[in-house]
Length: 299
Length: 279
Image: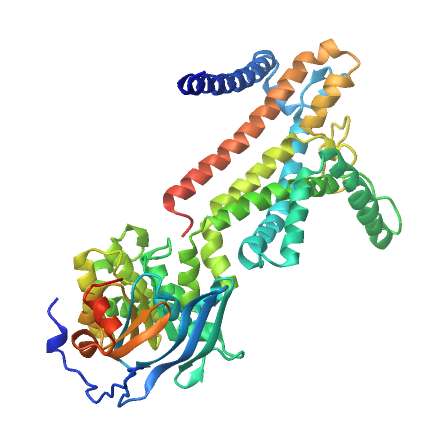
């Protein structure tokens, strides 16, 4: 084949690949919207499941998901930002400490999510929770059981690499000349980080947080053992309560229902709600980021 | 540009020119003394055993072709090279007789005494006011808003920028023109009241009018500050400086009063460079 022919066929091939992806996305989203649109009503969004989950709504699952993700963010963002600051601003790239921690973060990103679930059960629920019960509750089972707190912490460990990588990228994109200007005025490294670099990287910090949230909102495996409830119409009130979660609820509706046909439309609607929720979160992140870019960071 | 080298008074006429090193023997003691300073980036030697005095309230220019180590030498004077991994410095730099490379030296305090202006204007993406106030705030140099206002105004006046920006102090510094940004950076450096001001090609990114303003400014500033300027522009060095050091491949070739270096250079390599035969 001539060079030109080769060139053309490659363009054609890559165009087809793009088309394939777009079509797949369209089929998935289209299918969900088509089937899931109808059952969505105020009652569905605000009510609890009834009649063996063949009727009623999904509010406990929405509430549980939002709360889980919120708690997770509170844990993961400060921790992730600190690690990213260490990597980008303080660490000596040649030191073994840097190389080992960097490798650890990379490996963390590659661990299957079910393993995080088992880790959460073993470490947070049994070890930490058990210890808390021994120390503060005279051995009475209080925190040593699956709970939203442990689920949020497990999820935080899972999403930590996402936060670290995106915050670090944002920190590195802050021009070196800002750091130099700050040092030249007699600023310490910490002053430079908190007054010059971090404010510039705020958009990246937000992006990291939201990426973690949209990743976390879709995960089911890690929370299977550490807090997600099969059916629990009451909302969680304390940190050691169990909770319903959208992703897990979808799994339950799809596989555990006594009457699969009856739950089918509810299932589609639940998927649509989860998709919309994640989409909304991403949209918020993009909007905030765009706005921060325009004003050139926070003053 | 109204002042040229020939019409300016030259306070240090008593200068001995030795056969090779050509270091001037001054009537005043130097503000900064560089003693066999060597700066290495890994194995590469950027500054090679340079010895040189920098006199009080005068402008010292460092000239030389690209990559001759003039910026590395300048950055050694406030230990900015410390921020680059893999840089090794040996020799001594005495500021008022104190070696800034002794282990106990407080680098933060040193950088407050030796301010710096960079090649590319690099104001923070904050307001004009916050830019100038930055150094005062981080060093805890002011105790009231009124004092801060006053010091910011004074610094902006010193940098000849006050009249242009006094009505828009809360606007972003990034909205200023390049020349205004560079004068803002000078004001920012002056706000902490340093003793020495290092300028790393401060006008190379600016248009001729902005350049002239910066040079004008340097003449007024040297009444209060000791200035060291790195420049690849020989006309600029001749216009503004009192002493000039010529560097080649990291080594000091010649250090002399500016009129002498540009009219009657002691070293044939200096003559070759200033007449444009290489570099």
